[in-house]
Amino acid sequence: MPLFYVEENQINFLQIIISHLENIPSLDAKAEALHLKGKFVEENSWSVIEMQIENIISEVE
Image (tube, rainbow, N blue to C red):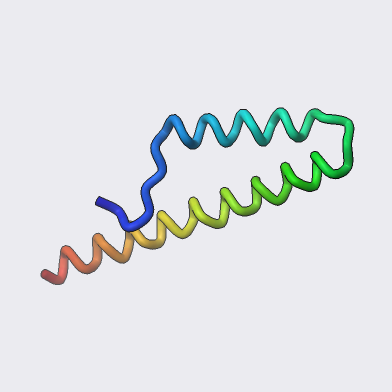
């Protein structure tokens, strides 16, 4: 199991929330949407990196 795991339902839910925030005509909401999107991308890319590390470790073992 990866060190960082996000269920597909959670990913879909986050994407829906972000898209709704982006459509609100408020600068605060748009800023929050961008912040969440950036955080989501950052964490998601970390999960990919962690998965690669785990694969390397399992190959070495």
